[in-house]
Image 1 (spheres, one colour):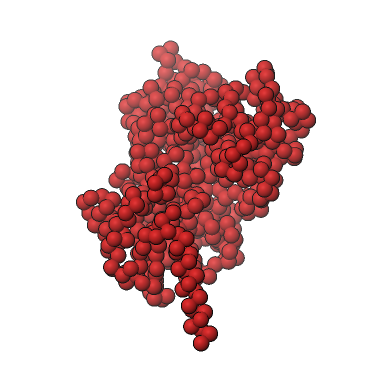
Image 2 (cartoon, rainbow over the protein chains, first blue to last red; image 1 turned 90 degrees about the vertical axis):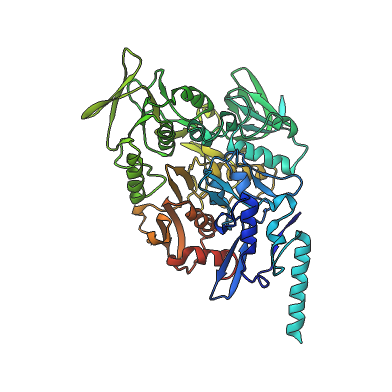
Amino acid sequence: MKTVTIDRDKCVGCRNCEMACAYARTQETCESSVSNIRVNHYIEQRTLMPMTCLHCEEAWCMSVCPAGAITRNADTQAVVIDANRCAGCKMCMLACPFGNIHFDNERQVSHKCDLCDGDPKCVGHCIAGALKYQEMNDLAAAKRSKYDQMVIATAH
Amino acid sequence: MKTDVLIIGNSAAGLSAAETIRKHDKTKSVTIVSSEGGNAYSRVLLPYILRGKLKEENVFIRDNNYYQSNDFDYIEGKVTSINNKEKNITIDNNYSVNYESLLIATGSSPIKPPIPGIDQDGVYHMWTKSDMEALIPHFQSGKRVAVIGSGFVSLQAAWAAVSKGLQVTVIELANRIMPSVIDNKGAEILSEKIRSFDVDLRTETMTNAIEKQPDGSFLIQLKGQEPVAADFVIVGTGVRPNTGFLAGSDITVDRGICVDEFMQTNVEGIYAAGDVAAGPTSFGDPHQIHALWPTAIEMGKFAALNMLGKKIPYEGSLNMNVTQMYDLTVASMGNFADESGDEVHLIPESQGMGYMKVCSREHRIVGACLVGKTSAMIIFGMLRPVIRQHKQVTVDYMNLERDLQKLTYGLMH
């Protein structure tokens, strides 16, 4: 499946992804507090880390949802929440080990990345090339090649 | 009739097991027996439906095609006995089904405290779909309800009633509410919140009798207090595992059905999961009953994997609770009791999460509880693997979210 991949070395912390996501979700605000993607920053490590749902193969949020509100989209393979079925019990938030599920206090429902039906707006608005929408297998290959180059560089 | 896999129970544990079997094995015959009948539903949703947050039909968590499309056989009936030597069960004292392997996921039922008058029309539990259907007509603005008990289920029922404009009295025998879900301080904060919504919450109050009046309403007679008037009563004083039909089998029951880390009972080929099972916990207790939805899902999954012969041990259950109540999020995980002697780390209110406490033992985080804001749930999610792995961690509790993120993303060890 294709998913949003994150290269934290490339992220410049502009937070365009948050704003694009917030607007895609609400169609009225770019307020990053309602976004499904969040850019975290760690000053000491000099690191920026955009985080959004990984659409886990064994998605615990999905198995544990007592309302049957979380399913896998057949087309995109995204793990999605049906807001009409969501009870607002927050069990999915308890289940996600990455903190990638958020809560809409007004509607009293959980929300998370749904890959924008296969056209993730965060990727489209990333100015640094840190976010990509790509096959997970390609990501594994890219990581391997990056690691190989590091090894080669250290050897010389 | 004969089936490869027989599952007694059609809720969290049973469904999780059936689906795990099917995921790994397309050919084994799987039969699900349900005493309630009808499509699978979720009892967690009952208060949300009574409150009007969800539609009544949303109680169903699997659709009409579910059994057929997964190639599950479905029997509606009550299992009346098990013969583990012959490897069969009897349904409705009438006919038998033979199995290769058996999963008992029969859940639990509400405890009926010995209160005179508890067995009459107008006194309900909030546990099954039929309970919900019986309660819906009563949930009308202005009606008076007395809720006996103040555990998770009772307080959810009370909250649903408050939301619908009912007059609510909660009667609790003990000196505080929700002992298995939050600590003393949390219980205090929540009690105050409940009272601020005009709920007459009475702790240390003993119910002597439930008396029906000539007009059909009730008087709840209390020890040393004026009686409370109500139009109907909800009793929620805990649940007990459904094990009655096991009498005469060789299966070991100690309150719940004792299972090992493979979810197997003392009888080869017979497994148990969910509210009925007493299994291993994350903290090394061999047999504990959680009666929690997430535990049932996990137990069902591991039972199924081991019924398929995979020999994969369950890492043990970690108790976790979460719910919205009034405008508060109430949550807990692991060991958070005041009496445990663990180190206590209070997250300052200035961080905007409300009352949150994290407990640790020798630099290992062992539990947390919250009566506060939803934003803290992100921390709970990240805490779960940390508690489960019993990892020694050096975190700054004043910057817990940031440090847990670093742990989670591999920026710190």
